[in-house]
Length: 195
Image 1 (cartoon, rainbow, N blue to C red):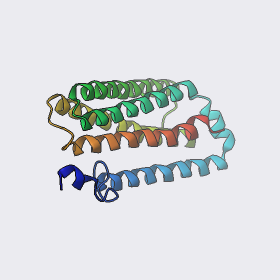
Image 2 (image 1 turned 180 degrees about the vertical axis):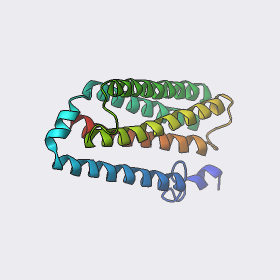
Image 3 (image 1 turned 30 degrees about the vertical axis):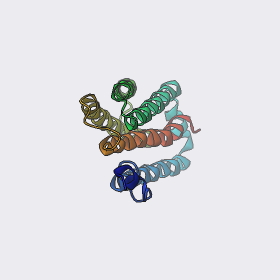
Image 4 (image 1 turned 120 degrees about the vertical axis):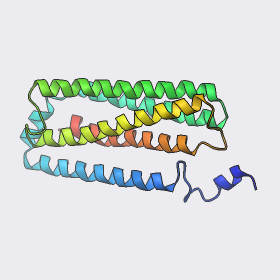
């Protein structure tokens, strides 16, 4: 039996990236979900405050960042797909696009944070902004770490360290990068759009 056939056996226990990363990511998603549920509960206690505070957010920037992050996730999926075919040049191209979009997300979010600080809307401004800073801030840290991991993968992909038979590191990073998409998709409508 070839290594590839062995890798396809028992996919439930050996998913892309390995079972450990999936356990960690499940805990991460659960934690963010609990925070979002808590946000929604606090919102019911003071709807007017939450609606008023939300007006200082830019739904356009939030939407643009959503598009940027989802597109970056698509390019990361293309990276993995190309590596499975040993197309290193294309994989390198797609991971560069993914990195550029990840950085664009961070720059746009930093601009948004700067604007909030200028308005005096810190984590202590009110309960809405406490949740805003905590949820988006932890997500920002996840994306920042993701960009660092993508940069490392780009270096090794260019060096042709990974190939179709040995690319678990890349799959693990891709899985983590998709987590950043999922978390943002959970945060974005609740913080920016729900009224």
